[in-house]
Length: 139
Image (cartoon, rainbow, N blue to C red):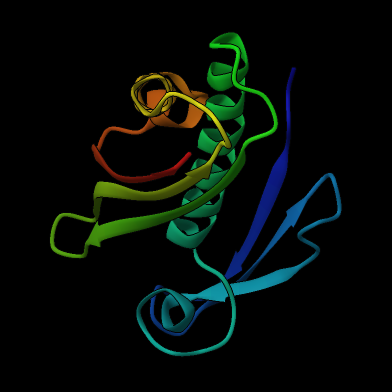
């Protein structure tokens, strides 16, 4: 399965501007640039998009892991904080903050499923960064 997105950029690093478009239409010439990445100008940036992708991917992977453990109907909320080191121009870490509500579930089984999802979701696998997690389980 292949998914596509494209970027258009014009200008230098600090004065240039770009747009991002995804084949699905969810991004359609969405603005991005130096000031949306490092300043307070409205628009998106690559790290925000990676965070959204990681949070979504992890949540789906956790739902799958929980289902395989016989835990059905969970509610999963995931926030991904992506850290970019401007000096090395590298994403150095992603921290997942996760809340799982799974009525009647075994807390240890939820924790095991979360660890598996963190290690095995496709976005986790592609990132060359430290991935940490805080997990709150409501059973």
